[in-house]
Image 1 (spheres, rainbow, N blue to C red):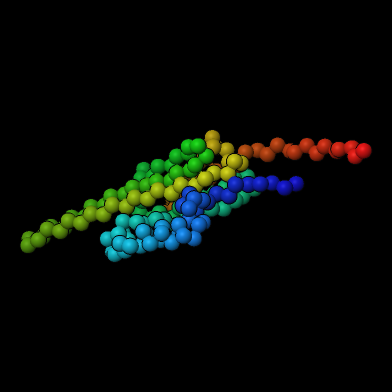
Image 2 (image 1 turned 45 degrees about the vertical axis):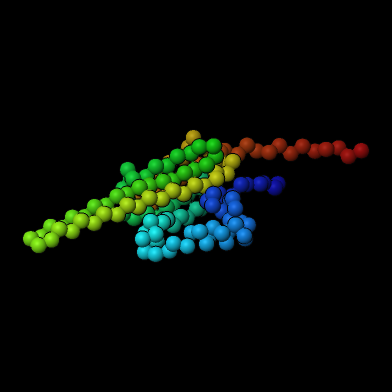
Length: 150
């Protein structure tokens, strides 16, 4: 039996980046303004995707975030993981006042394989890791039918 499964890839890799010329332009655009400011602005957490017999597991490494910073949605076969975090730090002394702030935001999108049950997806944030479990649809056994050769 041969099964075709649509692989779960981030959408950036499922569109133009497979084309070497488009990938070159994407890289040029992404790195044209490289400096400390733009590097901080483009924070993107690492993601691991594991396929188990009954589910897929996506782990997003996002330390320093809180559960309420995340938004996970599914729409039209697409899983979207987004988060925003704003930090403000103030120090006041007799001779000076220091106020620093930072803002981190990211969004990752993944095409879901057809075997994912979009109604049975669960997420948990613990110890800096957002863990998303995507249960697979129960497979129906494929009936084998003999064909008489005449």
